[in-house]
Length: 223
Image (tube, rainbow, N blue to C red; front, top):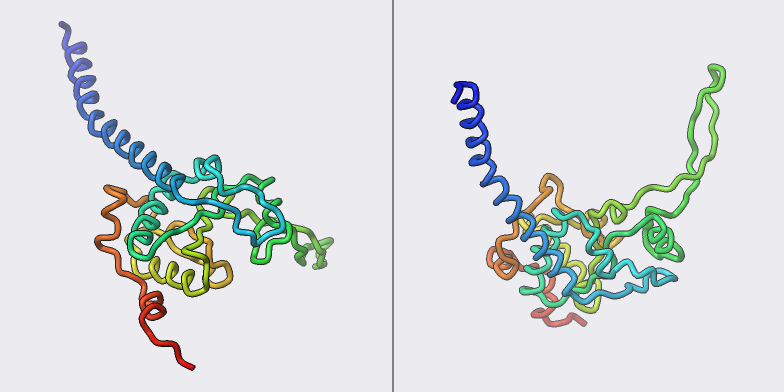
């Protein structure tokens, strides 16, 4: 065999051997994502009733459109929270532009798809003038990196516990960036695009419980 062919065969064999771990890792990541999607779709899901219309953005089709890395982090976080503090219901997942517009109709809280008027400065013949224009922002739900969830029956204490649980356990990979302005709204934690999910059931082993719920359940009420 000519030396050139020998070199080509050696390089091809080396590339094939080196690709095996990559394919195995990709396969493991795919299975991890599938487990995450299956877990999320197994949770109760229903309309939150905070808007005027049931836009059905909590259905399996909407969960399937979430970013895979966010689905993994969300599944891990929710599995840990449920094991420590009880049930959670999904009330909204990914939204198309049409679904986002639907959700914004009568929405009591903040809504990214709702049109709003802003004043913009423009230059016309070296003079600065102002014009009012209508703009619509894009919701992170439309990007597949947001999930609305309701802990328990959705009391303020339960939502505070949910958010505190995320703050106490940043390794679980989610955050609630809008705080009390939009209690259910969950997103991936900054700087953590993908959290590995070795076992959903094992997620709570290293999770710190929220103190908000502990206080609520153990302290005597003050008259």
